[in-house]
Amino acid sequence: MASPLTLTKLRKKIMNRTKREITFKAEYQNYIDHPPVSTTQMYGGACSNDEITISTWRPTWMGNVEVNKKFFGEFKNHGIGKLYGDHKYKPAILAGSGPSLAYNGELLKNRGGIPLISCLHNYHFFEDRGIKPDYYVTLDAGDVVLEEVSEGGKKTPDEYWESTKDKTLVAFIGSTPKLFEKWKGKVYLFAAPVPDKEYVEHCEKLEKFNSYISTGGNVLGACLYFAKAVLGCNPIAFVGADFAFSYDKKFHGWDSKYDKHIGQVLAATDVFGNKIFTWQSYFNFKSWFDYVAITVPGIYVNCTEGGIFGAYTGGNIRNVLQSSLEDFINMFELSEAVKNGFLDPESDEKKILF
Image 1 (cartoon, rainbow, N blue to C red):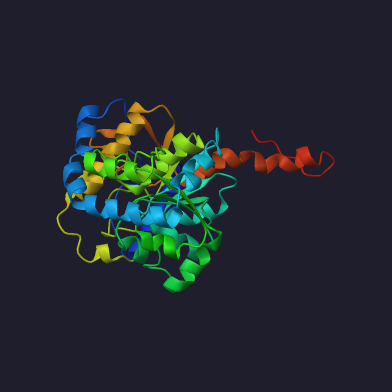
Image 2 (image 1 turned 120 degrees about the vertical axis):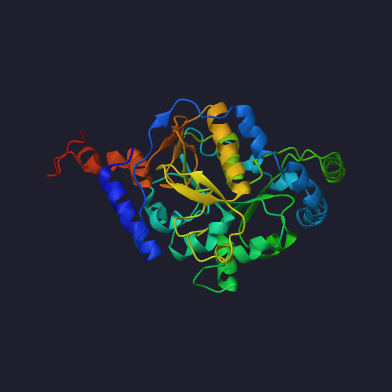
């Protein structure tokens, strides 16, 4: 549970963001031992659009992989395997692109040595604030990812692309080739398990590259698999993992084209017990993350401070701990308050941690 002080600040920050008063609860729901749906139902819902997605994107994926193969030569020479175990036994923070970043994203600037793995969508948001993720991750095969790097930012697209020279990108081999033409920093590649014979055979003819990342169909899912299976991180904290619109119907932590017409939506329960709007596809993503938290060993901490991850009408599932981002970072930084007494025993500073 977050402290009352944190929740009071959260209310103020949300009202500042919305520029008007909104009535909502800002105290986490009680935990429940089991969700009201089975893990089979969760997984089934998460995968409900797979067939449509594959039939729609198959030609693009295949074409992109072929072009990218020519660009990189051997995928294996740029594979994510080169990063294997780099942060083993360490915590990690994963950053989605939800609207909650508008009121707690700034805290990521001073996170100590905790690795930050971010969806590429957040690039301009973090760059404008001097926040430096250790890795950016992308899964998109379409050109829309190019405009999202700068959409809502304070600089020109060219300025953002120029700033990538000291950044690290973890990318799907089926990503748009235009991204690799523009990215100036390091690139590490991964394959995605697509249950489609035609796509698999096409890729294997080009190169046998089995450095797979399971994604749940979304880029934050790729961040999670990368953190656990490749880097070896635990616990995993999430920010910006709203999987829903904000209370004033914002989709990101910045002005976005998606805010102008949200289309057909459904109501879901957020972590505080409020009703909030989301898209069916994003509710499916939430179901996938809930499924992972229940079935895959690990400690999962939702520091989004809002949204629907782990939330149900009867409460929040115990497998997903709900915490403020400030409290999570402090958990690993407490010793900083007393370090002078250990590094310089003759100092006049006398502090006891607890």
